Length: 388
Image (cartoon, rainbow, N blue to C red; front, top):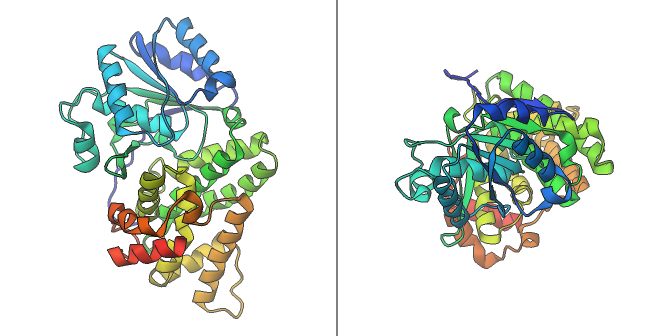
């Protein structure tokens, strides 16, 4: 394990078919005014909205609704939510939805009482929170981001063509999250498999860093093997509770900061994907799937030892009569086959990216320093061209 670290995760999870009972247990800990945050209204069709409203009323809460959170929450929507939260003197923000809704709720929680423009303060200057924070709770309806148990919050500025994530500290993490795998059953297949790859990408972003004998890597290999197995089952049978519950649990542990311990971590795939998302508004998991293999093929020579281990321990690639490079390349080939089985987007052109956009996307891509190679502008352009 590399370096010194501190680990704390204050989010309390309620998991399983009866997880919603945790909401009844948690609500008495907060004031009367609850801001109910959700997206386009699917929770009204599947009954989750009625269930949550019933519990809020049962607990005597005053409900303030903030609907219409888009898949890539915008800074304009953030400003709107801040006004509502401050005007209504909100005591708790309850996010009911997927990662975007949870991200948005956390952004509002730190921004409502911010004296400056929160976009400038938190997303451009990446400063810490020094103002009042409204507590957040989550009822998860889509898995992938891990936002239910971390401090991450991604916001898009469409005018500036920037999509930026800020990972806040323990004080911004959700106070509690409700995880019922059944709530994810009605998700369209496209969104479901995009979520599967988002999970995989989160793990790989942390895995492909460092070369020491790190316990975190062993944990991630187990998570990856479980994800691959369960996602194949879920693709054929989306209502398979065992598979969907495993995937929900993997998603949470993929990005709740545990497996990052002792790691430098990479995150360049996410920077590439988010830059693409800022230009196309495409589904997050699909932007990641489109750029991942071109990126990993580009950095493979610099992290050959880990890519070889990935091939052997995750994809069961045989070592017989093969060079290290051949083994590593075969691992990525197995990953590509798996991605195609899921029906993931493999090319940026399918997301609406044109060659004329590549310079702008490259300029919007933040450069990270924790992986096997620090990219420059020309590297990014090369990767994006290979992803087209």
